[in-house]
Length: 269
Image 1: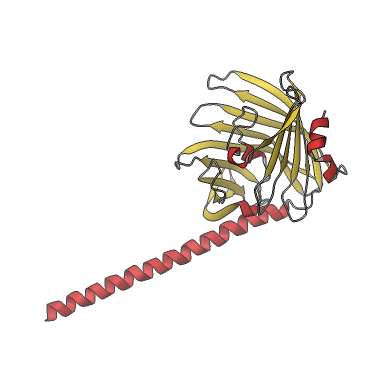
Image 2 (image 1 turned 60 degrees about the horizontal axis):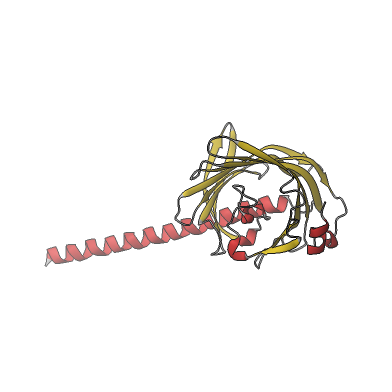
């Protein structure tokens, strides 16, 4: 009888410990989710209010052997109150892509809208939402990578703090809400002082590391808005890479919605 009582008591203690551990883990998970969202929200808030911006950029594509080709582009972006940004990218050279233009409307609560104007065909092609994971103009950037990264498009979790080269970073995980995303999750390194993203690891739908984006050469504009001049995307699975080098940032150019339509897409030169 005493043995039976002892066995029952030990079983109850074990059950209580399991329950307590589960409750503690749930609280830990809840705190990590809340902290991850808070970090992402702060980074977003700090970049609100820029209005509009334009820049020049060079796209450098490298194959796994290191051979490279270059493209020159112009980019302009219009901030939207209570929604995602509108952006227009126009290719200037080489000749085979000159005049090609890409228009993107990013939305917080609905699917993004994207169009591509192909001058050789003289028509505007709409990019289907199901193709958002496809490569942008043959680069290692997907269409979803070059849209503004709205808070509502992900769920978040704080992972840890990490110090790299004497700079302290938050490391958070963000998981795309859209099941058509090409990624299962992303790990983002955000500096704890200015809340700028310096590195993003992209994992494919099989949870394998697919690509890494490193952002560098940050400069502050209008005493508030930080922009990285170099975006270097490396594909771990193919060995290919694409680098975007930005220059000539100009803010508050007076752009309006009429400058970001499919008609203006055709006229972009």
